[in-house]
Image (cartoon, rainbow, N blue to C red):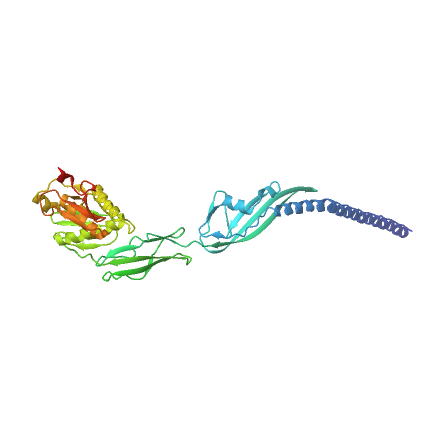
Length: 398
């Protein structure tokens, strides 16, 4: 009896325990289902927010494909401006920039001093806080890598290169005054191709070049003219057709004109006459034309001498020896002469112009003048006083 009663009790307890266990299982299942539903509703909603932030921040990466010049120095702020559209970032997002795996800091500078590819990395970090049973903090990360190409497109700069003229026997250094410089590499070695034979007259071409660190080459050429040494004559005269420059000392006079060089000895009368004759031809070629009449040519000659030659008042032998005032050379080259010098200049110029002339009172101490044949009549031409006309000189009339 007692045994039956014990069995009955045990059976009741087992049933209770089974009920309790089943209830526990049901509670756990309910909690799991509720938790899953909560996770799906809350967690997924929060994940969508996270992805929205990440997507928005992704639009802040700017494209950057342009090459950078070798030696370019850029600040952290300049790089950020080129790589990041900061107005596209979600609120609270911070960023960092790494160049060749080295993080830059605000205010820092980076110099692209090697040619080739440089790796840049931009990182965004946005803190996101939400509640899932408890408060949670998640860092939303965005990363983008760039490859920047650094190129050296600027050749060195050569300075001090210009054509040179030297004389046989002069010392010459083709590198003298020539320099080469690179904006990044600084001063460079100058190299030269070509030689100059300073013992031989001629033109020589010198090539100057310099190479920078990245094999960019700059080159230029210049010409060196080696001239013969001037032949010294004592005394000597150089005449170029055109404008004249005269210098004289003691027994030496030098005349230079602009067109044709004629060298002669001004210490001799024949040398001075040669110069005067050449100058007469040059002047006549400028002031007359073939189409002019004889009278027009004579007037041009008279006017030229009257306007361009000063009158020498000292007519002593000593004065003539010092300045040749009684020669055509004085009138045509020195531009100051006595009346006899005027007359001899007229004669040379008339010969050059094809006008017949006579020298009146030549080799006398009286006043001298010329006459020219115009229309079969000998007409007075006194260049010293600017007179052309009449058959009787005013001095003779008196």
